[in-house]
Image (cartoon, rainbow, N blue to C red; front, side, top):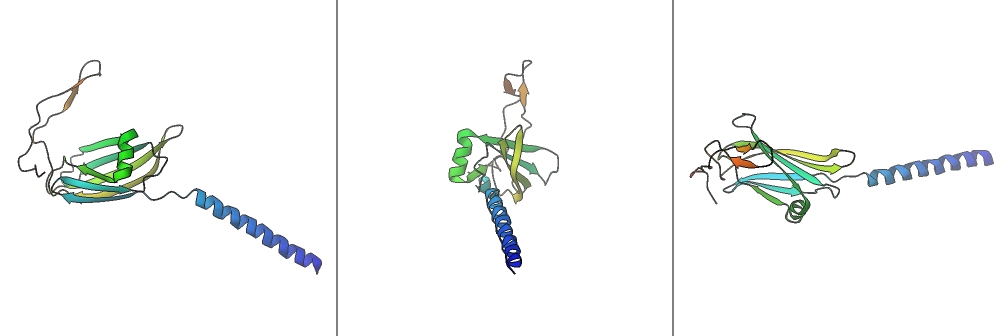
Length: 164
């Protein structure tokens, strides 16, 4: 009878240790979900970003115009003070959009290990209700040494798109 009690006690102890360790490990690896909400406004598209992981060094934001499907997209990367400000406010305005166009917006949080590694990514769509957009094709042009850029032409802004 003592052997049977010892075996049962041993199994229970091993079970408690196993499940206890598994629970602790799971809690340590939990990463909060990056939350992104996008809403069209008279100023362009408002992004509300929450739950940016603490170990994020870069936050990448890209916008793709679904309406024209012309493979042109706008993107930016926030780091340092800009990232700290975004963490505090949780709010970003994307003004350079075309009224009535639908945009696919992807927000990706990245951290540095041996290389840049994605922590979380969230993709959402929104329709621009306003904003500022350029109606001519001004582009950035690099010089021969790739250390200076200039605009190919002065930007011409649409009167219809300025709703600030």
